[in-house]
Image (cartoon, rainbow, N blue to C red; front, side, top):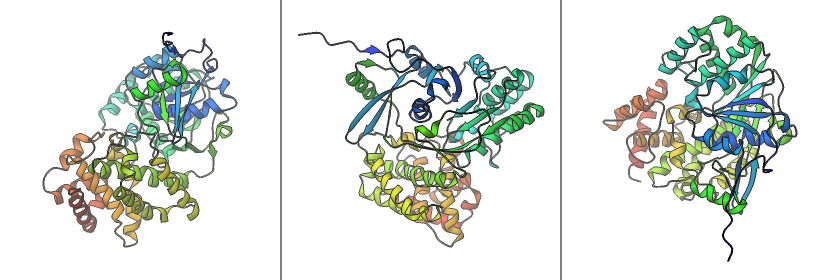
Length: 463
């Protein structure tokens, strides 16, 4: 009997993928979603050989250490209900740790590098209550103080890193540049442009003026469910491909990327890889934020209270499924899209959520509710209240989040946890008012909404 074959490590020299393309794109926030989405689109573009990506981890260095020995290659596992498909993605030409500031500035100073995508989560933009940069944030204050004295020092925050990079580009006279935020934020292009401008202006008004004149910002809507990588994913790649991969990514078959805006220095032909370019991202953005992401938040909080751990488990629960449909019925009338298209999207979402091959953990989705709920749930609540309605589906999501903060269901991971969690202590009615005020004081001032959230939380507590 022959000995089992030892899996071979991924390597471009061994013929995996194509040769590394020269770096023309940067990415901040190297992680699973980016690798299943923007990097995958770039890999499939017909001119991919001209648009290599240098990816920088948002925090730490573990992923860069896993990808670098593989020449930036990784296996994408597309998990459909009827089986898995494996493909090697070759668009990441180099992977860098978060603290590799020297390489970050060097790439920005190169005329060949022409754009950067960003996935740092909603919390990573460090916005204050008015939507601009939170200048009181300790990381922001530290970056402003440091960059005022030396624009080449390593920055701590995402806005600081972008400003430092753009300052290096200005010094090198490397030409115009494009920023493409790809996080689940409405108007993410305007959000990124504002926080970068605010920080740059605090550092050097002349730099802020140069950025305004030389840097374009593209607004995007991104969609592809991508769970965390597990040991089972690593084993699946070895068994199916006889290759060893330290950094595979599992994702669903569905994918969507909608972009709007001008590219100051060119871009890959992403449209030939399936991306959509449009004058107005907003209808697509709202559809995704309210139906998919809002539905995810509902399942993450209410589903975990009912004992579920994954989206597929939660959506298989008839009660959770009915709550999901109720929420969609409330949010859908406010979408500026044809009714038939919205209905078809909802049915597609049910199929995606129920995919047994995608183990999307509710704990992962539940993170940063203080950042997510204002853009996923509150727009529908505000519109309904303006029309004199009290939408029970929206109320239920807020009540489930309140219960989570009080120790029920999913673990609490939130950029504002130190501030938010104590607000949820004490008598339920007082806790509800305080927690809602942290999302929007106007919502907390609505006595009917507060009373409904309390009643819903009491009902959920019986689950």
